[in-house]
Amino acid sequence: MLDVIKTEYNSYENYPQIKRLLDLFFGNIEQYEGSNIDKLSAKSFFNSDNGMIEYNLALPNGFGTFLEQLVLHYQLPVQLNCIVTRIDASSSDSIVRLSIRDGRTLQCKYVLITIPLGCLKARSIEFIPDLPDWKQNAIDVMGMGLADKMFVEFPYVFWDPTLPSIYCTSPQFRFILCRPNDCILQIKLAARIAYDIEQKDDKKTIDEFMKLLRTIFSDHEVPEPTRFLLTRWAQDPFARGAYSNFGVGSDKQTLLDLARECHNRIHWAGEHTNHDGSIGCVDSAFESGQREAKKLIEKLKE
Ligand SMILES: Cc1cc2nc3c(=O)[nH]c(=O)nc-3n(C[C@H](O)[C@H](O)[C@H](O)COP(=O)(O)OP(=O)(O)OC[C@H]3O[C@@H](n4cnc5c(N)ncnc54)[C@H](O)[C@@H]3O)c2cc1C
Image (cartoon, rainbow, N blue to C red; front, side, top):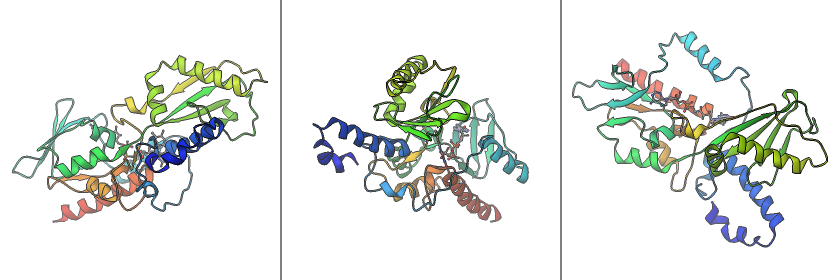
């Protein structure tokens, strides 16, 4: 994307205010995709939503409750803390063997892999035989974005309580959601900014944020925060990022390759495989799971 706009973008070099506004605008795209514009594909840019109609629904008790309902309704035998380290599909008996970190081996006819793209990129599961080149290439070329959140609680609301959000042309803290009922400011961080902040000490980040707030609200008294919380999705070994995006060189074929079965018995789902809908979202993950479940039901009938 940056290549496409570079000439125009650079022409604002001597207009720092306009450039900061432009950076805020591009920051909005980077926030949504979780990736910097120099890493995003211009050709595939509009494909991540794929015509999706957006509805916003918050699950106040978290996604765990949504999954619990499914598990209870269909009596699914879910095993928690079952970390797969190796998938061996090399045996001639058509049984796939999964090595679990606690030393167990599970045997099954088919495997449906739904670990995040970030974990696939980090090769956190060993495959025997190796994944075919077309699958590994798709894993490598598809983008895995990063989005983090920073929650800062104050003893009282010092900002205008009718403000839904604050957009700032700061290089770090650009998008602030205001939650006056909880006395919380929620800062959205993405891409390179989020990677940098994940490396820093929380206290240093909060001090930098407070400095910015005291500049914005220079005519108010800004109290010290009572508590704060920062997420670190890139450092989570079971996530290694937030959600996928179309990186340079990826397109619909990449999604088809990410979704395509390999080694006969290994199937793939997860938001990064949803080639007929959106990617990166909960509904993308859900639809991809349904797609593969239907295929597996048919196979099990054979
Ligand atoms: C900050 C943030 C904000 C977001 N906001 C939204 C939003 O507003 N709306 C929206 O729709 N989506 C949002 N998303 C994206 C959404 O959360 C993901 O697209 C969705 O959760 C992907 O589902 P999934 O099943 O593909 O992967 P995941 O939900 O990541 O599930 C993968 C599972 O695999 C497990 N796993 C990893 N490695 C192993 C292993 N070796 N062995 C066994 N298990 C393993 C993980 O523990 C995890 O449970 C957001 C994500 C982030 C980070």
